[in-house]
Image 1 (cartoon, helix red, strand yellow):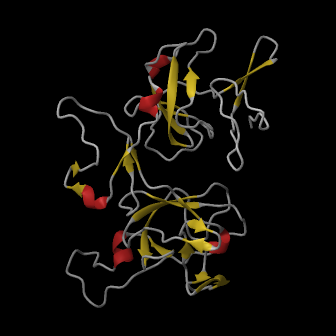
Image 2 (tube, one colour; image 1 turned 90 degrees about the horizontal axis):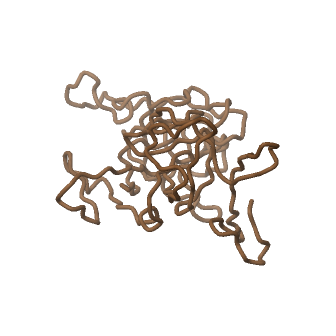
Image 3 (cartoon, rainbow, N blue to C red; image 1 turned 45 degrees about the horizontal axis):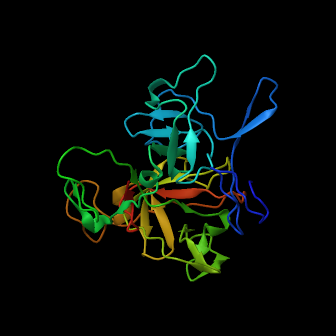
Length: 289
């Protein structure tokens, strides 16, 4: 953490810490005697799929103009950076000039895009919700020019984290457990002792991802499931879209015999915080940068 302890005189290019907002930087050890530090991150320049869920992979996605790090990069949008290659190495396909100052736009904790100007890096994104989508068209608030083509980064709604104490709870009182409820409270905390609605809809595909080895019972890390929800704070998960919405798997019209089939989830013994990551269709606003 970098801080001047309220004295000021911040080193140009760095951010001073403020109350509740520490300025965290990763450190790179340099120098012939390993006696010099730089603030920044190391990454390899090989190809990587920036559309995949981050794990330990790293590299450059030339289709999305993204750089992925194998760990949390701790950059913030607008940070100035200078790219350099290790001795005897090149920047490969990254398409940037060594020694030139670029500006970071944070895509997520593992991915960044670089811009030639700070104004472009920090420009407000174009946001939209599902009602703005029609066929192959998306209506955004800020119009693009009719000429030329544009490369954009689609950012979905942020993941919805939950802990083991949010699995199998009484929907009428989340402080009480309920062994046969098979539900998960994923509504984000927006105030002390209060959860907002989760913004998910029944049938929506989500990806379950855990940050540790202790998984929720009967769920598989990185697997896609389908939401069953009443539109508030708790959800159940199904293995298929039809099992979530109650449709007839053979494609015939629905009838009263078609039921919902939720997975019998049960909490792990760990208190690590896994997350259900919404893949598409969230009513919360995604953005196109």
